[in-house]
Amino acid sequence: MDEQLHSLTRRLIELRMEHADLNAAIDRLSEQAPVDELGVQRLKKRRLALRDMIARLEAETEPDEPA
Image (tube, rainbow, N blue to C red; front, side, top):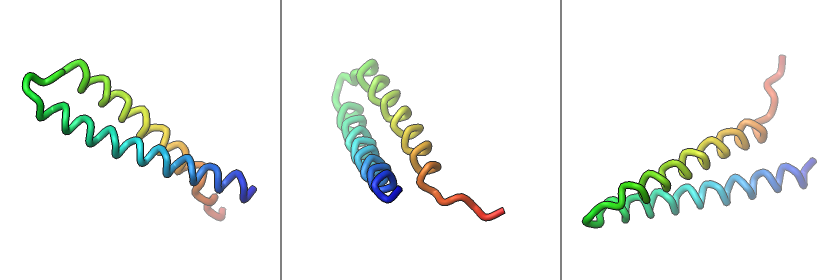
């Protein structure tokens, strides 16, 4: 169980780092002229998918509430 929790925690960290990298890439791409709208849209779609994955993993790592 500890190994699985450690693995989930590690994966969460990796996903959060990738999400932050995408935020930076989106910011950089948005500041360039002309703006690559398709590129920005693709990065935002990937960022949203990462956010969903992060939310699912966070739900898995949270302890169950007592009844």
